[in-house]
Image (cartoon, rainbow, N blue to C red; front, side):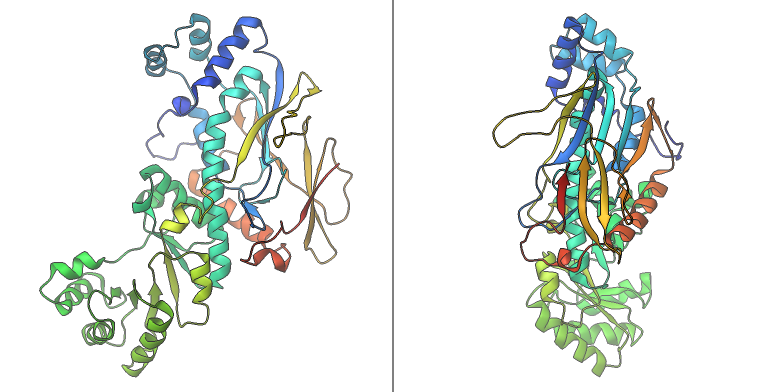
Length: 435
């Protein structure tokens, strides 16, 4: 069920897929196996090297796309042009509507190796068609959210700004802004993320605006006149100390903030704070940018910094641009099936999952079983219904879905053991127990 948001519907996602999904459907239609009832699961065999936990993101975007996963005349024509001319296949696709069930971890939840973050129950033909779309959305968004969560930890409650739009594909930029906001980034520079998902947006000026003017003072005067004294002035186009002096002369001690975008940031931030205080601008914030990642943010923990702007490292997953999730057939007509390939073994059969907690509410284990788990005190069921008979269970606007995911993430993040937040490489914060 699609939710009327007043926004233009997204591009039909049916062709955002791999050709072999359709050739498998064609072969299954031909030999009579297309209607076999199947269970597919999405999981990651391992976390990116050295990471302690992962954050599931993108489920909301996947549910947004599902009602539009259709093969209209344009899509059918495109398939014909690419040589997919099997009449039985094209007729089936023209009538395709997903009619199966989907369960999964709530968006914003944490995951660990083997966590069944998404379960699709449908005929083989219907279920296999969703593989590429599900993986492209979940792998990307979870990579960004997982990296962003590490940056939030390193920032120690100082606000972070997402500003990576110029470093990635235009649609990936919107998804990245959404994923970053889900885990706690305060704002984004991306206006489309503001429109689609109500992510708060922010931005002032770049060096180009200063260079446009005859001198720095003229640029600052123009910005303050347009945006008010509460704006943030970029002070490192020329000389930082002179830039700070000029900024305070123009805006007065009410200046909202300065931004540092180059150089030895810890040293510059310390000197900037001293100078601002000397000039009476004791409430002026210091925001730093310049190729930050979680390690650079942690290195600034002792510096008098009030906020961080993060771009390239965030939108590329800070070294892990994908989280390695896979979409595997685990059950066929009630019979468990599994891969036995060396290094890529899977566990057959539909899974159930709970997160176990101790008496203090701290997570201790991820328990994944072939049958529903006998509940213990402190257990939390992880799988929730997302789709039934092709209909979204709880249709809400994209902005509301993101708001719920953000709130859920904050709750579950608080249950992690302290070692989960270490930036040094280590094992997953809790073990996955498969029963």
